[in-house]
Length: 474
Ligand code: GLC
Picture 1 (tube, rainbow, N blue to C red):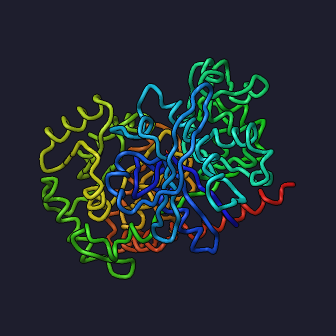
Picture 2: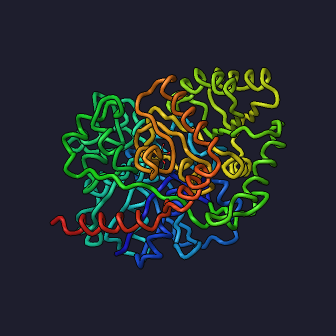
């Protein structure tokens, strides 16, 4: 199959979160399974600066968007067996950060239209166009409005993947005519509750809608999770599927990772993981003793469960845990952790920031990894933690529920709790603490956690199945 994968970010070119990881690793795993995949990204300034020499110019043309008619350059380069295309327009994409501007809606409407226009200038006829999150959602609408009469587009099927339903591309209603330039008879596709809503347009127009875990695919039918989109999702439930993400097994491999101080693997980890733990202690100024280290690598925001973490934390420290926290976010949470570290020197270590190399040392050096999200479409950190032998303690939601099973029955790979409450979180952490006291039993658990398969292999097979199913729709 020929697949055009559309994303606003992809590792290593530009990334701000989980979508970037997925777009960086799913395509190459699909290629490894014999599919022909090409990826299209915006040519952000940072990409031009870093890869400028390697980019090959393909063509340039104009893209119309409402009353606007904008220049668009098209560049390409191959990377790890995948062909990438880059959409160039310096006005839209030569900026400091990927998102966060008043005209983000216009920027990504342009990107989405430009993707379809670019297909007219390259020698590639996709069977499937796979779009991701609100930034590329409009591809699924524009193809139906403007491109179906062109032979190349007649049989193309579209997929839309929701990585996080909290971000929908929601703007004022007048954007539909002014910026998106939709003809009146199509306007209602992009309208939701009186606003413009990019994600809603894709839920209507894509042939299949997927999300990044089976549990999240159910959860988003419920108002508690759906940020207002549950009625339309329930209506379109027949085309909704959930496929769990994987992690990049080349990138996250404790056996070969050059960032961690000693390498180890699931059949030999005791000595070297202990060296990683000792290094982590010295990095965070923690005392050497036989306490377990529980860690967090997270954005310090409400939906990651930081409020219940704060309520339970002091109790956990008092009962004997050492704590490591790396993250940044809301001021109230940053202050909480800084205060805790000041009150418990040698027991609690905190770094405010986003530092990927330090995160890697935390996965390698800690015993437990805490991720009690209020909602979590998939989550990647818990899978990285598993691979590095840091036992996840998670709330049973979304991808956390699908990737971590409680070990109470002697089979699972972590510790889980159901309700969003600090006391359940505390109780769950104490079960893990008690488990840790049984050194032999704990090693068996770590080994089982590390041996689990969290790679893209199985998920890529699921994606291929979904593509095939979509192609056979009519
Ligand atoms: C978003 C979600 C996260 C998921 C990632 C990749 O960042 O919040 O749960 O793992 O997308 O799909």
